[in-house]
Image (cartoon, rainbow, N blue to C red; front, side):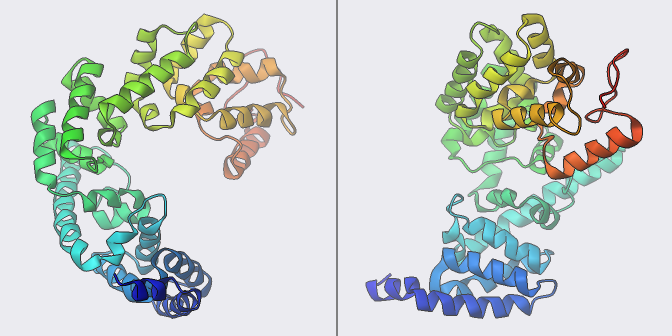
Length: 361
C-alpha cells in the first residue's frame, strides 16, 4: 500500500465520511435499526478506516447469503475486527479469504449435519446452536475462527489418528467448537500432551470435549498452567490431586494463570479445613479457575442486604452447592432470579436452607 493511500485511509475526515455511508447502508438492511447501525458502523470504521464502507458490505453479504440475519452478520464482522482478535485483515483482504471461508463453511456444515443426525438417531439433545454454521455463529461468534483454518481435513485426520477417534466423535468435537487455529505442529504436540497428561486417549478426548480450545496452546504453555495451579494450591492439595481436578475441569487451562492464586486464596479462606476444601473441589473442580472477584462478589451478595446471611450461613450454602459459586451470582439478572426464589419459595440463594437452620429475616 502506498504512503498516500495509507494516509487517506487513516484521515479522520475520510473515516467519518465512511462511517456515515456505512451506517446508511446498514440501516437499509432488514432488522438493523438506526442506533444499532450507528454502533456497528462506528466499530467497523474504527477498525477498517476510510475503506470500511467498501470492505464490510461484501463480507457481510457473504454471511447473509449463507443464512445469517443481517444484524448477526454485521455483529460477526465487528467481532472479527475486534483489536483483541487481530483478524481485521480477513475483511480488508476479503477476496483472498473468501475461498478459504467458503470451503471451511461447507465442511463444517457437513460435520454438523452428521452430528445432528447422530443425536436424532440416539434420541439425544444436541449441543446448543449446533444446527448449522449460520446458527452457531449467530449465537457464538467467536467460533468463526474455524473458518480461517487452512487444510482442516488434514488436521482432523491427525486428530483421529492420535486419539483414535471415530468419524462420529470428530463431528461431536466440531459441534462443541473445536479450535484448530494453531499450527499443525502445535496441534500434534498438544494432542500428545493431552494423552500423556490424561493417561489415556479416551480421557484426553473427554478433556477436549470440555475444553475444545486447548489445541491452540503449546505443551510448554499447558505445563506452565498446570505448574501455576499446583503452586497456588501448595500445602493444601497434593500435585496429583490438582492434576486429577484439572482432568475433570479442563476449561481452567484456557484461563489466564493470574487467576489461579487469587482464587486459591479466597477458597482457602472459605475452607480452612482440608476435608471441606477437598470435598468442595472434588464436587466443583471449576472453582480452582474461578474469578476471585466473582467469588468475593458472591459472598458479599449473600452476606449483605437483603439476605444478610452470617458467614456461617453463607459457608453452609457453599458446602451445599459449591458448583454454583463459580458463576456470577451477583449479576443483575441472576440476582433478580435468586431474590424471586427467596421471596416466593422460601429459598436462600436459589437452594433451600440446610435442615434446622432458620431463614434470615
